[in-house]
Length: 402
Image 1 (tube, rainbow, N blue to C red):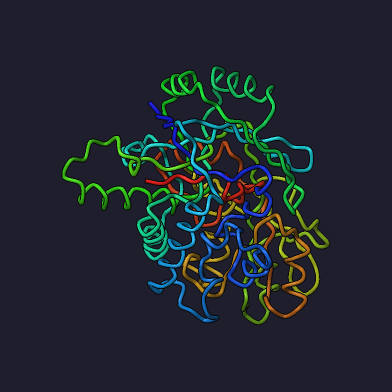
Image 2 (cartoon, rainbow, N blue to C red):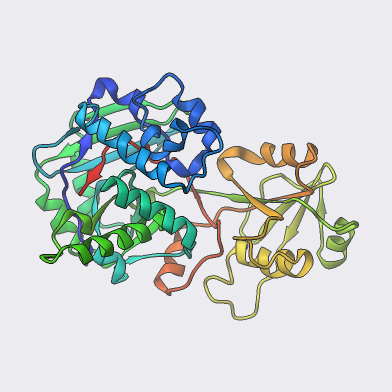
């Protein structure tokens, strides 16, 4: 049984929303954050990317970075840049990108559900990134950004969402990337909470490190609280929970920086290459490779009697090309490979190769939400960078403190 937890969110006034709301911390680097926050002292980037307020070259893991983030959040709260709800609420959050609508429930979910695998994962987390997010949470005494979670469509919850969006929204704005964001406040939370009592599992879509870090932060708080009950706010963290039919996954493409001399010929000897292929593959099992100014198509082999992970294109790429032909055995840590979100298009792949920054680019067919659910249900893990979700949630809309 999944738990939805209403919370007293800190949120901006509608007139200040567009300056405050920002992209998530992990889709931009420091220089991009500095540019986006320029002339915007109340951009939420000052909370989630506090290094932009520190001297250039500051180690992002220095104590001063975490302290600055906490200081900036305290300013947001004390100066009424964000104001707290009087009562715990839930929210319905809708994003519209290029005419496609995605609508979910913005609530807190339970650390205990995560620890008990009611909330299922599909990726490993990296200890260094866990440490970083945990320190931000503990120092700020807040969960500044929500996780993206999905669940198998449920008639009752979807009906409640549709009923809510018939009303006037609390927020309605268009972000700089053209995505429309709408938010409705739900004060009568009981029907939503009851609906999720019939939902057996939630699935992490985007935000594995924030989930794990919320669990670690709660464990730290529990140790310091002799009167721990399990109902304290540190036992919950914010998420937007979407029906799986609303989810949209884009390709997560790859670039390889250095390839061996004659690598194209090696590929031709091992696979039936299609010359002048389309930059974006049109079906599962196919990839497009850009090398020497031309696109080539390859149909990836698949292992005999594969499990749900072994059928994934990203696994098949790893098994038949990256590992045996390029000696890239751990793509999480190998400096010879990098990942490019599908939102940047295949033009970005061509630019990197044509500009001499990479030797080869690989355009993938998107992993499906059904594949993600199947892998999670089987308790297996996907290879890194298997999914790129769009549109991204906006940060700074609702903040959860404990």
